Image (cartoon, rainbow, N blue to C red; front, top):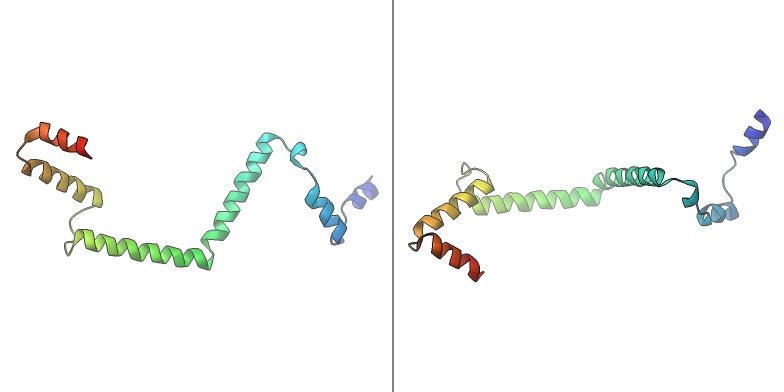
Length: 114
């Protein structure tokens, strides 16, 4: 039995025709739907790990960080203690609503114009 099992586990590298056979084989019928989903998830995880460590992604990540920092500086001005972007946005919206003299009905009309 061991001799038969040993014959199945060849250690020789694949030859050109062997590679073609493997590439054209349809393994989907051999895998269950659950196994296919598992393999897809593993491939996605491997891809993202590889991608995140690539020089291209690192460069892109640095550019995004620089842009975000620049935008925060422009939006926040010199005052960095103004809170989060959401807080500033909410505060600005609240101040804008108070300064309009028409009351709540006017605010609804303005929303409809957009």
